[in-house]
Image 1 (cartoon, rainbow, N blue to C red):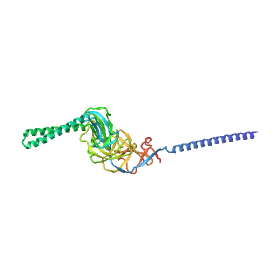
Image 2 (spheres, helix red, strand yellow):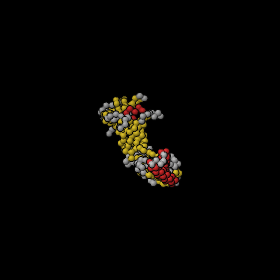
Image 3 (spheres, rainbow, N blue to C red):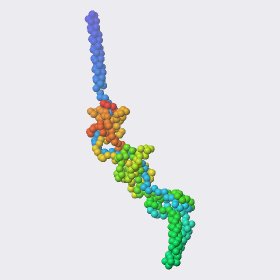
Length: 359
């Protein structure tokens, strides 16, 4: 009986020891697993910001000055009546081409025509009288005073006839230049007082772009320089012209100087008052580093710069900018050829932050 109790107690101790050993092993296994998880977590890499880059390379660059203005006709003439009267008729429809010296309309000139006829008749009579008096004077039948009086009467009649003819001619509305009859301000039957505007003729085969150049650039503008002009109506298209006029005085209101660029316009595509833009060459072409203006960020009030990729991280570069052209800016210092300039994704990065280059 005693032996049986000893055997039972031995089994209990063995079971307890086995249980304790199993619990210890489980605890160690859990601890090892937790340590492995911590090690895995601590060794995981920090997420890198995806960016796009552009390799910096010098490119040919010529500094230009962009100015704005408008298109103006080379000749834009408002025709006025020198002699008053009622408009009889127009001979040319509005919008039609006209030639220099072409008759485009006329005023009623019945009374002036009659006055011309009377004045010419008086002149012919005075001329005949003078010729007769001159023959008589040769025979000493009249005095020299009588002959001179006849001559002066003849000259006065001639002047009156010429005046009557001129007044009648001024009832004719004539185009002074080759152009287009752009507008007619009165219609047949309406009265046109002397000096009143009756029509507008515009010459468009050649036009000019009138632009304003800031005062500080006055020394860089010269007559004869070739310029490319663009207008809003034809985006992406350039019209070649030549500077024909540079203002002699500065406009006080905006401290600018007006210039004019002559443009050939055979197909009449350029119209007066169209908005015009031009890029005036300021320097000869040279090799320069150009980047998109959007890639240059403001670091603080006095610092502007860019980000480049160095050893897998973003590196801040303070730059000095120069001229601008076509949405790009010249970098005069801070970037070197071969640098990997970050052009996309720079909004989410900081100096030293890991980045990942994507294509």
